[in-house]
Amino acid sequence: MGDPSTARAVLRIYKDDLDPVAVTRLIGVLPEESFRKNQPVLTKAGVDTGRKYRIGGWLLSSEKAVSSDLLEEHVEWIVDQVLPKADAIRRLVNEGAEVNIYCTMTSYEGGFGFTLPSNVLTKFAQLDADLDIEVFFEPSDELT
Image (cartoon, rainbow, N blue to C red; front, side, top):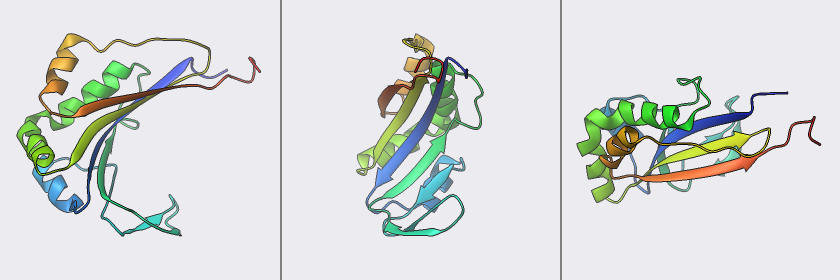
């Protein structure tokens, strides 16, 4: 059986005319993935899928940087990466960008919960971003 749960967080910045290179320069952090509107969507192997991105995007993921299964550690890692540039994030929001931290939690053994400590929430609030959380249940082979 695998781990009882997994967690990850992704800072997502979307805007129709988003220039990912300009966002990287502005924030000073390299994204996990970025793309412009109408850029071809490629598979991980670099094969063109025949589709195009409908909007520009800039994504910073905690998945490779944080080994913990605690959501709070993923959110805090994301926030700590960009908090020094909180003014730049707020400026992007004021210019019409959609900015959020998208979190996923997956349970393989049943119900579970999470806590986001006040110090993490206080830092997060400075970004003027939304927090989206999705929880999934995927029963292990032993339960099915």
